[in-house]
Amino acid sequence: MGAEDRYRPDSRRSSPWRAARSSRAATLVAVLVATAALLAMPGTASGQGTGGQDALWWSVGAGAGSVRLTCDICATDRDQGVTLHLGLGAHARDNLDVGLELGAWTREDGNVRETARRIDLRAILRPWAGSGFHVIGGIGWIGYSADELGYDSVALSAGAGWDFPLSGRWRVGNRVLLDAASYGSFSNDQGVAASEVSLSIARLEVVLIRR
Image (tube, rainbow, N blue to C red; front, side, top):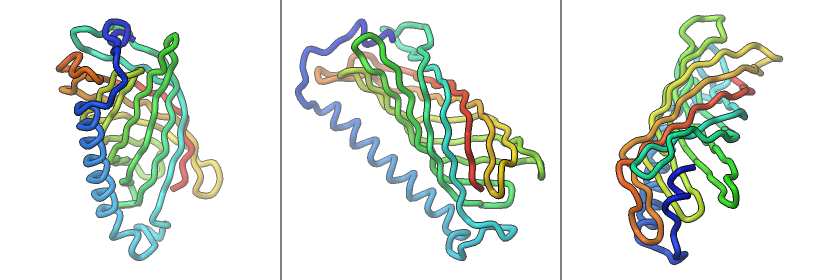
């Protein structure tokens, strides 16, 4: 990890920059949750999705991911770590699922624990009936921390996957995704350490789905 090695804070006091990050994140999370609830409302109100399906779906996944930070004080290599996610939503149509996904990436770099957390409003489109292939898109928030150094920004997600029937409504498969955020800034208790910071997470995950 590049930025933490070059810019380490010497104070652990609370700061207005940290409070501002927390406020922005809380506001965006509330908006995403409300939007997902509104999108899911027509199906869940009757307890059924289209085609006689139960309205709700959920997924859980784990895999490997790499993070890259781009800024004036950042190293250029990608850092390898572990990723996890949990998704929940409703069927907007037979071939379209919408919902929220919570995810995390983490790794340990010496004595520093690096963590990236995200929440997305997610759409999963299955363009061909009877096929497990699907494309994924989303918009949400990413927050990154390493010791006292922090970052958060609006993020976009895109990817694709393929899953197979397992038993009943259960399916298993894999997905490749890229989460990308730009125009954020690194800050700590002393203020802004670097501006115009970009962050990306490339993920390969094995997924268990109930839909």
